[in-house]
Amino acid sequence: MKKPELLAPAGNLEKLKMAVVYGADAVYLGGKNFGLRAAAGNFSTAELAEGIAFAHRHGAKVYVTVNIFANNKDLQELPSYLKSLQELGADAIIVSDPGVFAVARETVPGMPCHLSTQANTTNWRSALFWQEAGIARIILARELSLAEIAEIRRHVKVELEVFVHGAMCWAYSGRCYLSLHLAGRSGNRGECAQACRWKYYLLEEKTPGVYMPVQEDSRGIYILNARDLCLIDYLGRLAAAGVNSFKIEGRMKSAYYVATVTRAYRRALDAYLHDPNYTTDPALHAELQAISHRPYSTGFLEGNPGLSGQVFDSAQLVASHEFIGVVRSYDPLTKRAVVEMRNRFAAGERLEMFGPKTECREFVVTDLRNADGEPIREAVRVQEHVSLAMQDHVEEYAIVRRRLAQL
Ligand code: SF4
Image 1 (cartoon, rainbow, N blue to C red):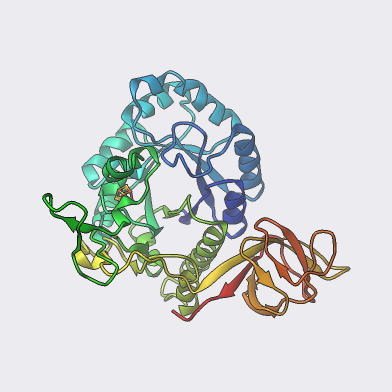
Image 2 (tube, protein in one colour):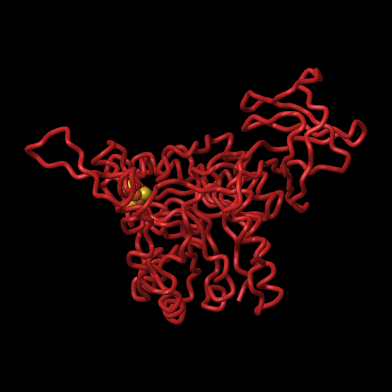
């Protein structure tokens, strides 16, 4: 069997570059049309061309989502869009609608089609159906156990992709109208407002304005608030079960999130491939606590999690660290690093930094200067480029972060 692939989200061009330099074998992204993540800063044609060229230069593949459930009117522009993706060099498209798949077969027959998790493939007979129809890869439903995945693999040759990390939907793979109903934003069109994670109260119809808490804690109750998925401990078992691609969820997440999660899974996957008896380094678990997340669970992998898959007392995201900025360049002559700032920081602060190839290290911010080279006490403007003195070499794309608390 081929080495399994690590597949990371690319919500925009910067996140694509982060995913690739931090070790993704492939990225998935949306163009401006026909994707489910409408609000994820989708790629223009020029950005697609640049992103695909960057990924290919680094030996990574690019898959483009075309996974809306199309209405009749959507079909008209679909062929020309698919042809443009092929011309740009996309390695595959991700579809969920059989109509879109049929148009893709006719229009770009050489382009591999991956079946989106939105198609809810939960059994081997469905998998066989899609294999016979010409699908190159099936992104399995998240609601499957390890045993079920292994059984599907025994019946099909088609590539199998499985989500290993990220947010879980309360509804079946996002087939949900809650957000559309409550916020006018459709989860089925990539505009979900995560209405399932809002806090809810009980309202008696004859007593308007009186919101009775269904008490769990003083702030309310979170009845539909799914834990995040984390399967870093299962990569070896999933590979043994015949999974070809490990997918990280999160096109809406930050570049810091993408870099941190991709780096952790890259290290775990390489270690498993080197030694099938590898058990996850606790440092990688700690790294996955560093990004904003809900408490983790293993989802459905050991069977239906029932109530243990939910968080009832808070919808709060937790993180042990805060994103400060990205290193854009380092001058070995002046020994200064240029950082694009995301959260304010000050001279004299103790921060952390890690790069695509370098380990995390602590350092103290010294000789902080603005873009004009003038000394400043604090960096305050998001996206501002500031420089600081760093004795040791710093990689481009290195992440700067602040420790918040021990979780
Ligand atoms: S509201 Fe919740 S369950 Fe529904 S699509 Fe959004 S995240 Fe998924």
